Length: 564
Image 1 (tube, rainbow, N blue to C red):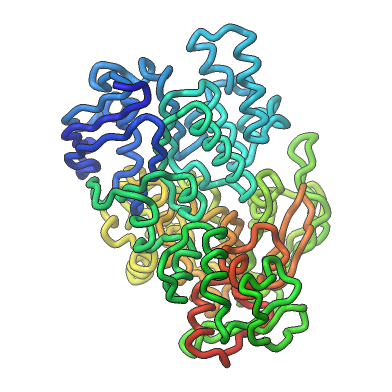
Image 2 (image 1 turned 90 degrees about the vertical axis):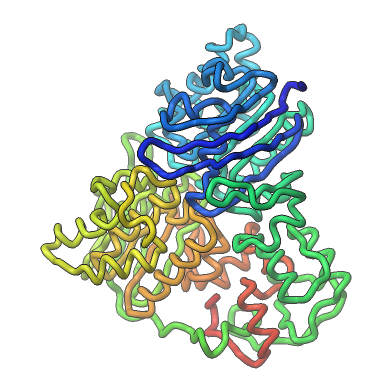
């Protein structure tokens, strides 16, 4: 057996008093392979990954059968600490990694336990600090970092020992686009240069697909599809936008990357019905044809075919319901927000973008009244409800249904229909009688959103609500947000998902170092971004696959200016 090989033989596992999470798996991963594990929330991905270093069953309890062999060692006879020299593991929840209240020392902790000498430790720590662009955080406490910064530091702690097998559970779920690129590039270098075996679960397939040699789909703890990413991923609901674009345009092969999609467009030629967008990012026509022109929306972009008669443009935003003026916030001596002005109107969805540590979470907490400003003011004329980045901080009841009903009890209301509505709206009906903390991260995220939204506050403030959420659940969440907006509600959402912003946001603001560096209609701001949605980078000026499909069906349909 080669160092880095992993074998599962008849592996099954069920949590104590819980359903079967892994069901009779027999498979192997060869040394040096990069395997992408995909599946819906609750499909068993995290449990499967935890079998690699023995966290399942040694740290989980439950009923385990079969055998897992990693680099010649059986996890039945070797506990996680006995496999730490060959397996690096990154949890879905980065907070679980930190044992030292100092980033640099925490990253070095694993090397100390493995007996590395001081010179090697210093070199290794410097290498991962640079690779993941977190050197500026070396002297910080993990408790003072943003969620994305903590995630990058946790990954650095796993990479520092250069393990033979690296296991990553949703490694980019809280990262900004540049941070995600840094992490995946570091993983690629480990694989290319050292032959590290990588087993990674990820819902954001547009990020992970280019890295993978192999993709594996889990459903109810069983592998239902296993093969090359180009064959396994295209049929999935969460396939990359460029893959779904290929289906709409009738290309013979499904690309997984923007580069491959541009190549396919050059071969097929730009559709004659497609509008053009001079001056937008990626606006050069790969086919050499100018295409048909759209009408101006006054922003320099064409007015685009919209979503069709069944999905009319939303009404114009109404009166201001939250007014933020001169907002500044400091955490101790460290300034986080500087003199931010922001108005939130009825009937709009505002997406807040920006790199990790830019101040997004602080802005949301201050807007929701959960954080006192250092200076400036926040005035709300209607109730504001806030869903924080960590859903577990909201979960205290014994069942999902009771968790949602608790909000109504606190508001002195009894409304079983409202509880049922949110169970249905966020695809939680089958989980209604489960304990919230027995669920996957993505499922707990939906429970937390439902438990807040059921109170029917006019303004919803959501911090990274798509963390760990699969594609069907993301569709359900988007539909719920759009419905809230169309009823005259307001949504302020911090996200690193530019695809989400392209689909639902009426307005986008970008934070940088605590200052608002861009604000405007979603189309205008996203078209000016280096991290624009995939479709925009391939077939500008379209933002989404739905937009392209609508344009292909009826080029005369025009959306409201600035709207996705």
